[in-house]
Image (cartoon, rainbow, N blue to C red):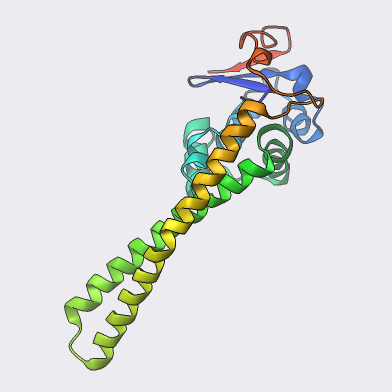
Length: 208
């Protein structure tokens, strides 16, 4: 969980006192001049959907376009919403300071690489199928052979990629059990406390 907010179902709660300690996040909240901060809350939900290490976008290695479309859809922002420099800075702040470690970012990049590789092989297979159906000359047959060879090479690399991803997952799991939290303390399950604490004061806002 990102400690400056909490998500329950489709609702997002802000811990404003904690959030305001981070200039990039404070800028999003402070520029919304309306009392309810409704647009800022939607932008925070957008940020959370893109940056949450345990969220759909990162766990599934979505590319930027797909991740943006998903985050817009489920944050309640307009369909034509485009994140500006402040929102992009806030996303980077969450990724760098509040949500991920070097191991986690490496794991996320590995997942993205596998997702991209899968898309590439799917497209190559589609092209190969189309070309084989009309391959009637030595040149077109040779082209099909080269595509088959390339697909086979990509397939040979897959076990190594999966092995790397598995090792990163093990390292991530190990860090989750014995990592550090803010202030240099060693993480233990006793530090989790009650999820309800710290989010019920006057600094809380809710997104329905």
